[in-house]
Image 1 (cartoon, rainbow, N blue to C red):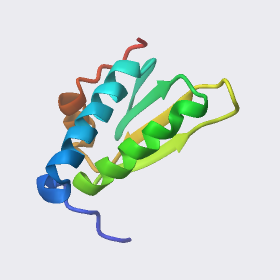
Image 2: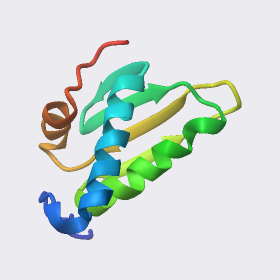
Image 3: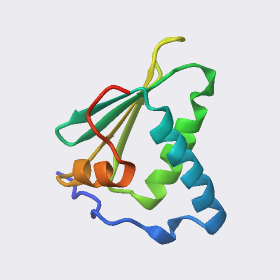
Length: 108
């Protein structure tokens, strides 16, 4: 079994302009989530699908650089179906994400 990436944020992974853009994308992530489901090891967030889901991929790419301990899974589904982003990881990730993103397991 491969060792897990240490549960450490890399605050230096993004330049100041990249951090600004990431903050904008994070706000969009939180504001546009249509559903939030708690998972044993993280969270699943659903969003309106469609051609504008590329920002989710951009957010994931930036988040992966500063939080490499997270596991990401995105499902875009059929046109018109919701996009689902699953953020999971080692023990403690669920609580970390809840605090960082203000997540609660309830439909929005």
